[in-house]
Amino acid sequence: MFPTHFKFSPLAFLVAFFGIYFLAAVPCTYAQSNYTEKSDPEATKILKKLKSVYSRYDAIEIDYTLEIENGQDKEVQQGNILQQGDKYRINNNGNIIINDTKTVWMYIQKQNEVQVNDYDAEDDPGFTPAKIFNIDESDEEFFYAITDQDSKGYKIEFKPLDKDAELMKIRVHVDKAQSKIYSIIIFQDDGSRMTFNVKSIKNIQPTVADFKFNKEKHPGVKEVDLRD
Image 1: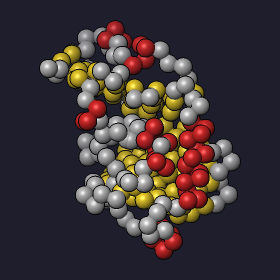
Image 2: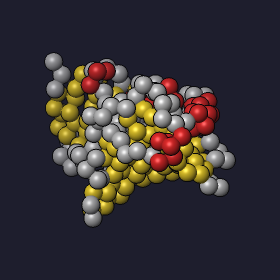
Image 3: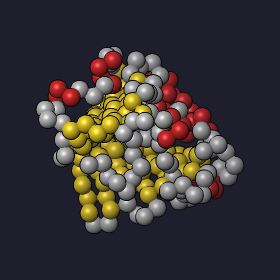
Image 4: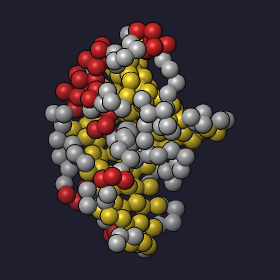
C-alpha cells in the first residue's frame, strides 16, 4: 500500500513529486539570515534552468526508490511515475494510481482490487513532478533558498507559508553538471520523512492506453466503482 500517513500522489513527488500537500516549516538558517521577504534569487535561477530542461519533454517518466522512515522503522519501495500534463500514472511497489483527468483508478495489489472514482481537480493533492518543476512560480505558497552546495550539486529547501500545512519542509538535491533532480526529501511534522531517490528521468511519448487501467493485466481483479 501507499503510506497512509503521507498525502502522496506523484510525483510524489515526487511525486511526486511529488503530489506534488506541502509543508509547514522548519526554518532554514541560511534562508532566514539572508532572505526574509523573498525566496533566494540564486535558487530561482537553478529552478528555472531545471524547468527549461524538463519543459522540452513530451512526457516525463521517472524511476525511483522511495525510503519511508518513521522513528526506527524504515521501508524501501520501488516505483515509476509517468506524467504528461495533468495526466499521471504511478506504480509504487505494484500498487497503481492512474489519472486521465476524467477518471482516477487506484489499484491495490494485495487485494487485487481497483477503486474507480471521478476525477475532481479540487481534490487532487497536486504533489507531482510538474509541481516541483514549476515551484519557482509559487512564491505565494513557498519560501525557498539554497542551504548548501558542493561539487556534486545544490541543496534547495522549501517551506510553506501556510502555518497550518502538515509537512515541515522539502529538500531538493539538484545535480550541478546535468541540471537534474536526483533526490527529494519530504519532512513531516510528526518526525517521519520520505526520500525519493531518482534513478532516471526520461523523455517519452506515451499513448492514451498508458493512462487507462487495463483489467486484462490483472486477472480476477475486483472493481469497486465509486463514481456518482
